[in-house]
Image 1 (cartoon, one colour):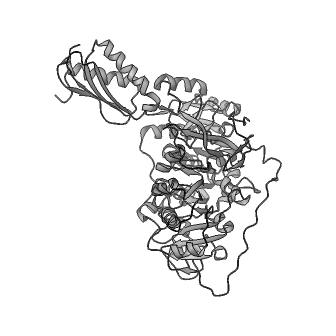
Image 2: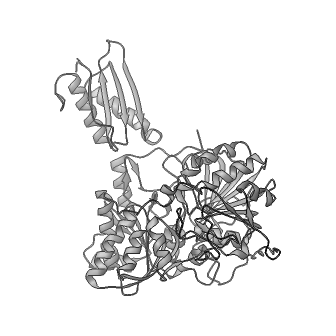
Image 3: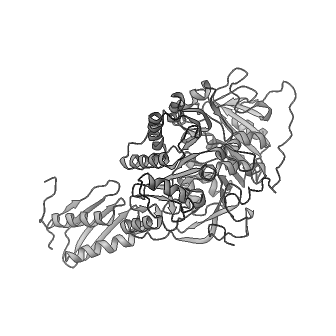
Amino acid sequence: MKNKVNIDIPEELAGVGKLEPFEGSFTKLKKGWMEEKTVPPPNKAKMPHSNKMCESLREAIIKSNPKDGMTVSFHHHLRGGDNLICESIKILAELGIKDITLAASSLTTAHDPILPYFKDGTITQIYASGIRGELGRAIAEGVLPKPFVIHSHGGRVRSVHTGKIKIDLAILAASASDIEGNATGAHGKSAFGSMGYAAIDSWYAKQVIVVTDNIVDYPCVPQSITQNYIDYVVKVDSIGDPSKIAGGTTRITKAPMDLQIARLAAEVIERSGELKEGFSFQVGAGGASLAVAKYIRKIMKKRAIKGSFLLGGVTSYGVDMLNEGLFSSIFDVQSFDAAVSSSLMENPYHIEIPAGLYANPFNCGCMTNKLDIVVLGALEIDTNFNVNVITGSEGYVRGASGGHSDTASGATLTVVVCPSFRGRIPIVKKKVHTIVTPGESIDVLVTERGICVNPQRPELKANLEAAGIKVKDIEALANEVEGITGLAKPIETTDRIVGIVEYRDGTVIDVIRQVKE
Amino acid sequence: MELKQKAQAGSFESSDILVMVEPVEKGAGRLIELKSIVMQQFGEDLLKQIHANLDKFAIADVRLIINDKGALPPTVSARLETALKRAAQLQTGTLN
């Protein structure tokens, strides 16, 4: 059956179950309550003054009573420096555990070493917001027997609440913890900032292990994770590569094209009518997206506008804007660089939030619903404004859904910034390989070659044109790009569905088919 | 066009293409080694374009070693033409 973005979705898929087709961003949500049941979190007990400390990660994993077919979860706040996922999977494999569902909030190239465990039956399914590197290539080629599921950051929380993801064991890295498992990422030699994605795992997993390279005196403050959810605590020498976990500040790009796109996007935002006193704002951390913040900062200073809150993945650039008084607060679900950690520790208006408060669609008001302006990137965008942020030009998984569809649906003004083509690869095109965020959530596309407004937003187009900004038809832009790059040969796939892309409400917006080798 | 010496044009930078030309014996044909980061999407287009350029300069026998980093079609033709003209000693290289 076809979903709202015209993708054929099978009624059922072995390894995933019944599929519900995507019917529009708010079709399921608008009635205000959900049919899906919330699964109960586990009830557990410990004797007074019992000891949670384990000698090694291996000991803690053995104590958690691992079984074939289990689901193991992790967070990805350690970014490219993470070593815990690889270490844990290695231990589980050595213990002979098979048929594991890996439910990591995201997987990066740091996790390439677990590829052998995809091939030997140790890991058979993945739930993640993003998958990259060797893993992304292998799963697109169909290495896993069960289809992988791509979810958004908000959608992951919903999946755990509703029992689609049933976590048997959560292994949570922390840069500081006390012996009871009160833990944080805000300080310590491996400080990585917010632990926003880990909170839900600690609440719902049957067993929870906190792993740290830094045991501190009781109590560990701030308590990003609290002791009442933690079964075991492990002290290890290292949770990963500190230079990659806590590596410096994020710099604004110097690439001329990204800067030009960012400058244009800032102009669009200024003229949209949404840049006003008390506005809330989110930008991605990549290239042109973060660079928009640089120009918005200038405009805010010039026009003496003060914003309300910054949201999402937080960079030191956002912290600078908070410290300059341009925004009154930051809600931080994930920190992108080391400089953010100290702000999280010291500034009470730099607030760590769990992923559910950030973006879960099944609650009474996630923060993304309160967003005024968000600036997002794209790997591809089609002439219906549908955005792909998950599969690359060869059909492999090499990106992340992240908060893309969450923020795009919530924000009043959703701006996508990207070059119209990269190298010879068209970005603005008639059809994208995989849809992650539906075009109905995107208001305006800004490229170096033209600005396109979604026809759903005629008033926005009128505002921009009144301000002297030229607006281009997206079909015309796609044709222009095709004229420059030539028509790319479509990616060859088999009929086998190797993965699905869930929309934030749990419906299926697209499927990913096996790439022919 | 008669090819007299080895020559090259272009670079191994993103969005550029490196073309190396080598004269071969008459009757050897067009020996083309093409590598491209966009092989899957544009491999056939690239080959077609290379042959069209060789036709244009009436070259039947040549060895071409081409490494493409996603160059646009006008760049491909320009680099190829320059490399061929250098090989035919109709144009000197910028490093000569």
